[in-house]
Image (cartoon, rainbow, N blue to C red; front, side, top):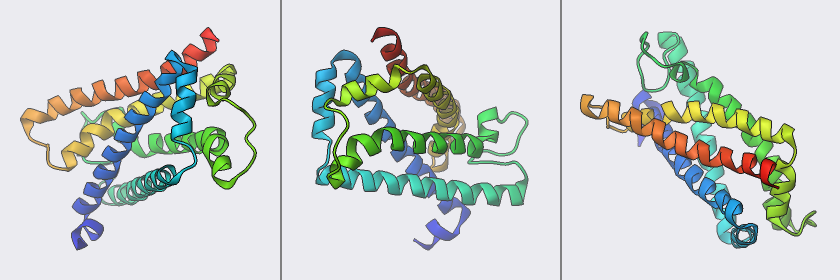
Length: 218
């Protein structure tokens, strides 16, 4: 276990595993949110099921731990890379062929983090935290609450900008994570990059569709 914490390879491994874990959460979260597009009543049932109960609390704590670990190790690796090799980032070498996203992963991550804070205050605080601590909720329908938020063009614009930043972060982060855990031979490298673009595009398209659909449909 010593190498996981103190070695550069170990830190990259933990960074990759936590990143893959967060990608799985994004897929689940996107799928859950898409229910609203098809049936607000079904979305209310889903949010009620995932409301203030022991597994929701455990899930929230595990997710928070995953984010903290990912952010902490991203910061450590970025500072180490800048000190040792200038602008080298993540699991790729500092080459002229490195993508824009690979050179700006930390900046993109910071934008995503800022958006996450906004999202937690706007939705998680209102839809779960208040219920957990027994505060009075300001709405009777989770679906209607989300609809009211995304009927405001400012919020739609902010979320779409954040989704673009998340797309760039995911397109590099997904294949880089797999690269770091061992899928790094020449045959799979191009495949992983292609898979990363496909997965990231599906996730972000699903998320972006929701505010756009609500804004124009409701």
